[in-house]
Length: 189
Image (cartoon, rainbow, N blue to C red; front, side, top):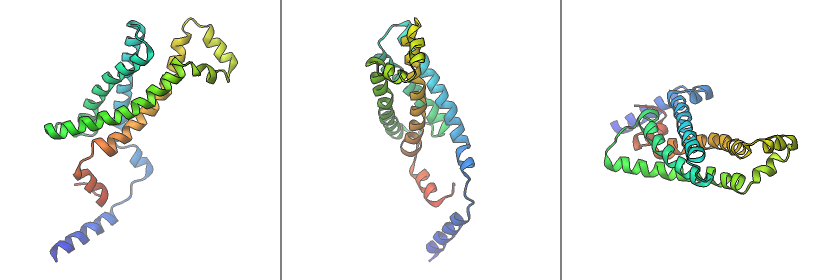
C-alpha cells in the first residue's frame, strides 16, 4: 500500500513540475557547453585538416580521416568530462561509452566523408558553383581555387556534424539508467 502512495505522489509531482519553454530547453548549461565543445572540436578538426592537407600535403580523403581521429579523441574527453559531466565511471562503463561514442562518430564521419569525396574529389562542387557562373569563374581564377572550394564544402558540413553528434551523444552515449528514469518521471534527483 505504501509503495502505491509513493508512486502516486511522484506522479503528481511530475505532473505539477513546470514545463520548460523552448528557450529554456535550448539555452541550458549542457547545450551551451556542447556548443562551445563543438566549436573547439571543429577548430581541432580544421587545424588538423589544415596541417595534414597544406603542410603535409596529404590527399583530401586521407586528411578527412586523420583529422577525424584527432577530433574524436578530443571530443570524447571534452564531452565526457565537461559537457555531460559523466567523468570516469569505471573500466566497463568507459569502454561502453567510448565504443558508443566512436560508433556515433563513425556514422557522422560518413556524413562528412561522402560529400567531401563527391564534391571535392569528384569535383561536383563545380556543378553546384556553376549556378553562379561569375562566382565559379572568380574562384577558378584564383591560385587557391582548390583550397577555397574545399573550405566552401567543409564549413557547412562541420555544422551538420556538430548537430548530429549532439543528438547521438545526448540520446545514445552519455545517458545512464538514472538519466532515462529522470526523463520518464520529468524530475531530476
